[in-house]
Length: 182
Image (cartoon, rainbow, N blue to C red):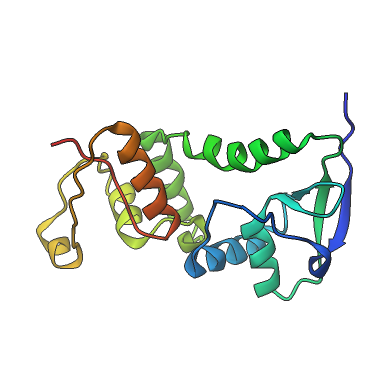
């Protein structure tokens, strides 16, 4: 079994993965920076033997926003070229495949609100938080007051695969997206 060791590496020495297909909007990097400021750097960057980032590009960008000169890293040694390429994709995609237990999430966020915790740090936008705090379920129609704040675009996709591709692209660009069957 591999023993993982954390080492601190200068941000200037880290090399972004050349074909990293995951994007990070400026607002998302600011959210990551706020999380690091609040909780510390709790999720190390994963790098290979040459200091190439395999996972954690957004965290490195956030560290630079925070003027951090070093970040915690875990070096993954012995991966083949194919494994490195696959890991860069899988690390991001597998996280996207998770869902939310809305009832449990609502309880937790309401408790945080009662404790006067800054909910902006959680990464949800104002409309999402309002929906969660009000106990609305996914797909619930917005209230009349919120119609003036919501603008929609409908994209017709030829199949579920295309829908997922477009959804992920828009989501990574910082757009609030939801899938709706018509």
